[in-house]
Image (cartoon, rainbow, N blue to C red; front, side, top):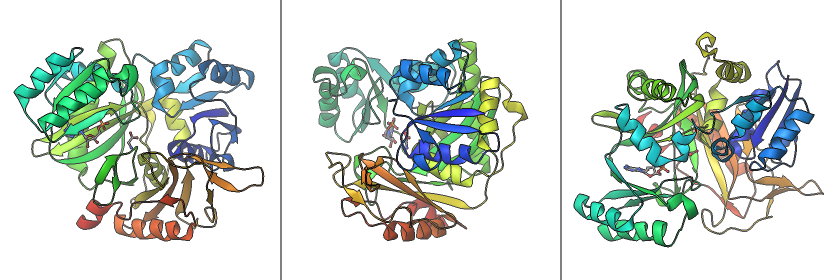
Length: 424
Ligand code: AMP
Ligand code: GLY
């Protein structure tokens, strides 16, 4: 079959890497892709927000199946558009992607379906939000309703920080229209985990747990990022916890979405806080996590492509996936300055040679210049991912590969996986 993957990050490189290994694939394209993806797929320069261009390409190239990586085109309705054009696709419709696209929708949805999450209020009026914040006290969490590239959340330690966040989002429009409405919610304590499950609208299939490091600095300090590293499995999500997450969060969500006429097909990514009373939902995403996907794909032993097609066809009940018992750990290398301003175009040496058996360097913001040199063009640039008997061994292997890469203009955290290593 002829397959198109949409996106250009490390997540999409991991998806292309897994899909390219499928015997079902005759041709694999990626739009727009990156220098690493070009090893597995033919990259076509169509941006992910050019829905017309993507649909036209899929039609003219007789694509049989499209896998949509990022949230932007999902929320904008790419899967709806492809379906209307008679092209099969993996990912939720715009109506179902509201689970990621609108935090206010998701909070009300959780309330309607008794899904455990933080207590909250939603506001379109700044003064009302501030009154609620003063009543609740700090710490408290302020969130822009819409998509804000992972940056629309302020975990405020003090009342002043929370009130300032309301002004930044509502008056100063720090996140544009995403902040027209805000959600203010209870600060939850516990250990964070990411949980992934496929859903075909009715059936659900748990994938695996993972943990991500969102802060830029060692010791989980500094500003939030898209994710500086991840590992799977997540020790905090043992078998019993996975069963609770499925029964208390994932299954009621898929059933609730169906009952509300927003049938969810795709991958449901639950950001969870595992506290003393069990799992509670922090947020939903309607796509794979990045860099969690890189760790998950390293552990997946079954062919990914038929599972994704089964999601689209409503045949997930017949799918069984096998996982490597070993741990996988991904270290993100980012451009100096990220998540703030950073330079583009710096050269990276040794990324290909750093790979060994069981270690893959997934690319995110990379390109090849006309001379074939590898250059960084994004904030998060490489995802160095390794398998090992446990998180500690996977980490040693990943960092050994990181140390073989020569990129003076990049950095990484040196402590990815510290929680899991502490437990091993
Ligand atoms: P999000 O973009 O919703 O994943 O939020 C970013 C980060 O903010 C999360 O990974 C959590 O660390 C933190 N966070 C969000 N909501 C809460 C909450 N209600 N309580 C505690 N931490 C939170
Ligand atoms: N790593 C978190 C995310 O993909 O949103």
